[in-house]
Image (cartoon, rainbow, N blue to C red):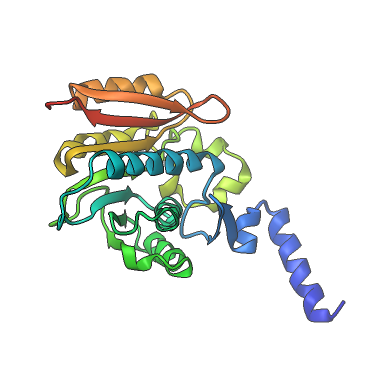
Length: 252
């Protein structure tokens, strides 16, 4: 083994011994059939978040096939709030293009962290979908002059503050901003709920990833902040409630 190769190998081993995630060491993470660039600018994409993509794609398909837009109407907008590495938005854009939805939908990816947003842009460029994604730094949906979205998706931080220090050591390498969801883990989710009525287009809906044990509290928050809205909770492959689907009742 060449001396430079040996030094590189020792450096990688030393990083792993400290608990640094393999994804950060490799600089890559597989998500929804894609290989994404990852680094400490953003949370490492988790397999359970693929459910958010699956449901999002299904709802986009339904919208396109069941409620076709009038000739000349602009494409619908899918907004990935707190996009992080861009995993959800890039996966949606790549799969939409593969399925032939490109003419019917455009994407918006926002994040409060400019560093995270730069990583999302890199992933979009690498997968050839930067042309269909609008990127902007924004605190949740606080974006000036943004057109209403037909679909809002969000994988917000939902880990309770007191739990964050007890997570596996690998999580200590990830940005706390992307993990800490406040006292009960729902601070940012409640903030987003309070904004949804003002950013969704007529007939629009939202998909929010939630943590284990949070379904009941999310339902209660929707009743309080969005009275009359329908809530459906979707479990992941392990049977854990994982995605909350929210929409105004017909006629709202």
